[in-house]
Amino acid sequence: MTNKIVISGYYGFDNFGDEIILKILTENIKKYIPSAQITVFSVNPRKTSANLGVNSVHSFKLFNVVKEILNSHTLISGGGSLLQDITSAKSLIYYLCIILSAVIFRKKIIIFAQGFGPIKNKFLLQITTYLLRQAKYITVRDNISLNQLKQLKITAEQCFDPVWNINLKEIPKENKLGIQLRQSKLVNDNFLNTLAYSVSENFFDKKISLLSLQNIQDLDVCKKFKEELLQINGNLNIEIIENTSNEKMIEEISKCSEIISMRYHACLIAIKCGIKLLPLNYDIKVETLAKEFNLDYIDLNNTSNLNEKVRNFKSNQIKYNIEEINMRKFDFPKLSEKISQ
Image 1 (cartoon, rainbow, N blue to C red):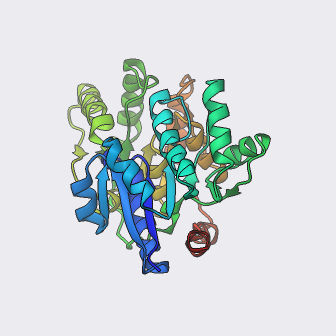
Image 2 (cartoon, rainbow, N blue to C red):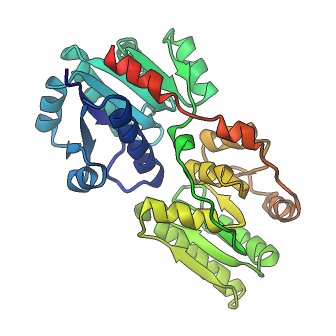
């Protein structure tokens, strides 16, 4: 019997982490459910379809989206941090409407590898709670999300982020510092200037790669930070890595000897590659990851000790437990079993 699966998430926006998650998810569905017919909701359906070999419809062509849900067996919502209203209440309402459509049409609902909350709007929280109680299987990627769902009397399991499942090539390290920044109200002129002084003081002897993982969010910040660095020291060797495939970006990250990073999945790839990492905590998910590996981090809400943190980062050695890293896998056989039941 053909299993028609629709996948809803933040797809088609060229976001590094989300696109890797989608690739891993679709590959594993094909592996464990060979008869599956997959449709992805994406803002760039042509690219998504070509890259992944799946059917795709535009996320915001709602008639087509609802039609695909009606004709499906299973809705997978995720991964990522979809069910929260900090980024935007509009995006939360959109994802809830997708799940509501599946409830109305009595489809199987799976919440996949999400980070839950926070949801500050009480009405939206009530709706979210009701809809999640209709789901067949819920996995969340952190303990905070799990505990929040328990308080709402919603059954869920904690999982590892699917990007841990990615197979990485062994790439020789270069004398290179990777810096990954993204747009945020916390990334202001003062922060960029302070970080630039600290980087130029401690890593003047290294090539500096500024990593733009989603150009719409990262590229302008990377360009501005490059200007700050060159004003301080015009002899610095700086490159901006942008507008490249996810595979090429992973290769560029893998070459670095050290990385200073905001984005969660850049941090995750760095750890998986065994690269010395200083996370920049702008979101609870980054702080959680840092604490899981006993890593010091810079809290962007309080950067008064930034220089000290960067100096310590330069001098300290970081050793990862390779066994622990290798055992971090999302359980795709179990997910496939839930879909097929």
